[in-house]
Length: 245
Image (tube, rainbow, N blue to C red; front, side, top):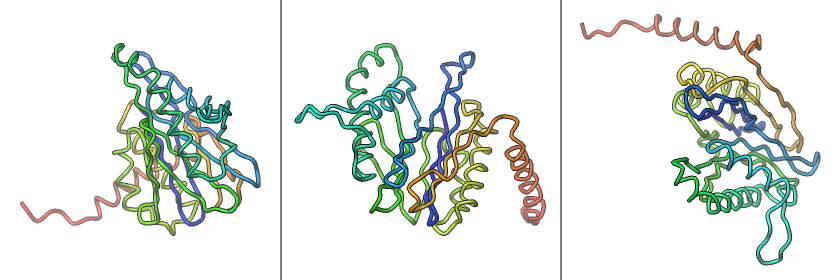
């Protein structure tokens, strides 16, 4: 399992992904699930992956090497696309192609071929956008009303984002809230684990503003976790006792 969150606010984009993969409680590994594709000043895409690791890694490789267009015979790479919508279509094509090729064999081995992707990015001349792409090739886009998307084990971190994130939230606050959401998930689900990878992109900049790996001993993340726990304890103690006794 995994947990990835993408937040698209007025100032820009935040995407955070954990790195844990597991095939049983005694087979746990660390793999990068957050990937960057960019031509600075022209276009930038960041992709977070969840689900079957072999399928998701193959999708990333296909996006780098190019998918063959059945009509023209030419290869189309992610960095060839002219819009973020087109990028979401290309990821969907790659996922659908691989699931069709390998899905039956994986099913016979009792292995799920399901994958999901968060795609955030911008091409010069268009707005910054955030999509969730499914293994069937279809996708959805987040909007100002609910400016975040999650894939993987999302239920522990979602209440924090539901109560706190708005389209007008600053980029720094969005990153902080994304990390709190991730910390809450780490505390409640063993299938999500450190280190964490994060990317921030400023709207209109067409380049990465921050690309960072949060390690297990990261001082800021440890302090954030402790402060959030203390704030929750203080908040529930400040609420009057229920009058139902």
